[in-house]
Amino acid sequence: MFWKKKKAATSQEEKEQKTSVPHEAVTLEAFKKITAKMDDAEIVQRQTNSGIPFSLVYIQTLIDHERLNESILNPIIHSTNKQFVQCIATCKVIKMNSMEEAKNYLLIGCVLVQDVEKNEWWAIKLENPLSRAIENSETETIVYGPKDSFTERVEHNLYMIRRRLPLTELKTEKFQVGSLTKTQVQLLYIEGIANPDIVDIARKNISEVNFDLILESSNLSAFMDDHTNSLFPQSMQTDRPDSCAYSLGLGKLVILLANTPFALIAPITFFHLFQSPEDYVHRWVIASFLRTLRYLSFLIAILLIPLYVALATHHYQMIPLQILYVMMESRSKLPFTPFWEALIMMIIIEIIKEASLRMPTKTSQTIGIIGGIVIGQAAVEAGFASKVLIVLVGISAIASFLVPNYLVTKATTVIQFLFLILSSFIGILGIALGLILLLAHLNGLSSLKQPFFAPVAPLHWKDWNDLFVRIPLPWIKQRPQYLQPLQKWRVKRRRGSNEQ
Image (cartoon, rainbow, N blue to C red; front, side, top):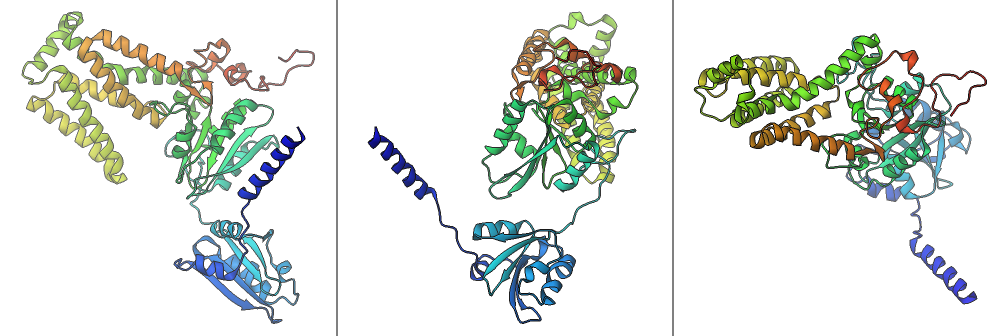
């Protein structure tokens, strides 16, 4: 037994010796090799008025030049103390011990200062504050409510959230992802409300990201999604700080990334993708009507044209006689079957939509409207499409944009094509089969291991007060049950009441 313990201890020591790599010393020669072909890198060798030599290493494009002269260069030159680092007018000076550490500080906007006599290196953070101003959200526009939106600076985004949630319980955990980009990631949650199991899952998913380029939130969500092959996103992207603050208050998590104005909210459900910040601005009756209209528009977008193809191909006897006369007249000279007619027009609509997005802003709307009208009229006159189909395609295209989430809008297009194929082969039975498969797929999804189709499956009746309709806010007294928050109630309970 003693021999086994001794052997295990020896193997552990050998393993530690193999894994431990000696740190490379920080030297000026090493910096000269690293910055050999970096035109924006500077190595400055000067001395103080007292004759003490020192060196500066920095990257011009990453630092603030005005603060360099005011906070570092002038205080050091006019210093009479041998400990000239103490004279630097900045809040934080970090001593470095390894070359790897020095490179990391250099690339995040630090100025590296060398005390030549003592051969000590110090890092002073002097990051360039270049950033765009806080503007209105372009992806989630509302008439009433906050107008600010996130920027590419994660510090600014965190400030806008903390301004809305002045809580010490609002915790932030910092990560770094991407072997090349070294993107800073902040995981936010409210301690005491968010379920620790969900926080652990998110923390594990972020820590296990193994990729070279993580440039924005969609790249990170691809590694965090439980089902990467699904058309539906399992985390919500938003550039609105008020949406993030509201989600944090419910017990959800928010993930901020540097260099992108979009944050991730998780876990979410399928129904969360149809909610808008404006739902909590309108009166509850109007908000409920608009939310119901979004669900109806989603069904219209995926079913209207496939239903037309199914009726015109397999079930024309179900069409009322007067409508059937109109359809027969408009289709009497068409060379295509209803399936090919619908497929061609749907592809043309998608081409116009994509072209209007890629063109300059001032011309995209004009081209989209004129192109749709001209092509539609020309297709009818040339005998390539019927008038009825042109109307249905227009209604379907407009209905798809009522969903607030842009990723769901694109998923709707793919689902529409799949339903079109099913309806062309087996008619209404194909549409029914497609709906069953769609519901089964949604029921099988999860977001951070939480059910994606909650509170319908699994069923949580109390969460239905903010599902298809939005009841008055004073009546929404509990947080969603599917999140299993540590603090269930959103209102202060009276004394003597039993809190579950």
